Image (cartoon, rainbow, N blue to C red; front, side, top):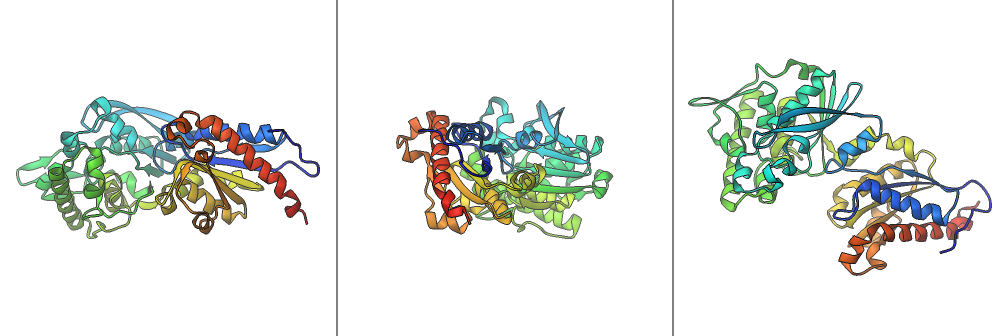
Length: 393
């Protein structure tokens, strides 16, 4: 496709803010491919690359690209082994990915099974929070995607000084199954610095803690749990919620997002006073996205699959909402899309370009995603040029 210069006026400012294309490209790689295509079709265009994440994979990289620095420390992994984990710090703000300490990738061999589904603990997550407090953090953002755990945040609470008691004595939390034995929760030893700190749970799910839509029923099978273990974990989380309610005087098991990360959302909200917020909104705030799009003419969002789940507040929809608040037009690029144009427009997305339109073979599309994104960006740039007369007063 031939290149073209804008004949009159300044070159447009285009922000490319894709999420990852799972199985093909990281968010940063996708942003770079889109930028290459735009610059090839519109020499002189100002392209701002702002790859995004919504609290899951890639979130740490996102904040590290926008003023945070990496802090490494050794903590307990989900099954008790030592692991080196990284979190991010900027002044009094800390960003902690629970998956760095208790994610599926931290399991021995990286493969979950029924035993790890019962025993995986968030203890290391509490150790990361404690390390951040040691370094002066007073606002802690906890991203909760990719967990291997279903312990209701009990391990995290224990690492921060809470004590769990059974009829036979103190219990060191070793996963959700052990919560069936808990009789009492003692919060007297909880780290006092938490009283002067604010905690935010960044997540993109609204599940309660227990029941058919709860942490165990919906997510434990993905963590290796059999049907028997799913039922056991749901009972254990119910028991844990009862004990926490007695200790705190409030019952948050039905709070939207309480079921995030195997109930870590519940534990953080109930015991640390955490606010549960949209993952993408939180990440956009931390990365200064409002500054990035100030004065922009177009925002390009994207992810591997744009579908009904995307419309429930995942990355591209959150970016589109932020762009709408700034009055910036948005188009989307996806590996494949099952979202009707009318649906997309309801969420502030003017047009959707699917890579499957250029390469119907899914395997080939994933293999050549970068090239296809470049070509799609050129098409978007060409549409921009055609629309210019309509934009001129």
